[in-house]
Image 1 (cartoon, rainbow, N blue to C red):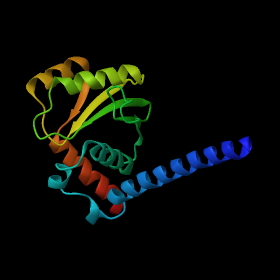
Image 2: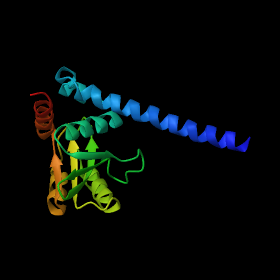
Image 3: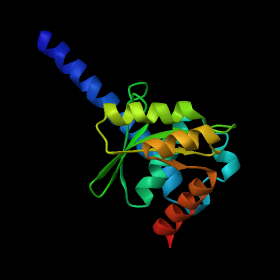
Image 4: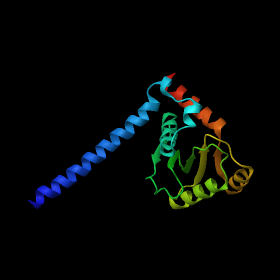
Length: 162
């Protein structure tokens, strides 16, 4: 009886993992299969935080990067881990209506330390405050604002579809 219970629990966990992985892949495909499904910026502006994280992950994957989504509420300041050649980036993705401030730069610096990356980046659908730019410059944090996000979206679409 104990073996049956243990087997059932393990099977349930494996099944749940497979379902979650399938859902994650479907979300990625939502943005990655058809260029007509790449959202417009006004749609990006209305995404929830986790949805924006997954969208940014998909964009980077579609442009050839290896990317990992950090566990929700366990990223310690990093939403994604991005690999480019020998570089490893802690990435903080911020879907904001207002300019992104110093707090996001501080968070990604903590994520950089926790995940032992050699670079840090904050990417947003908005802009950054002057203070955020100053701190980022002093700590060598890469900042990608709305304009760079749009360029990434175009590059991801071009690389996959043309």
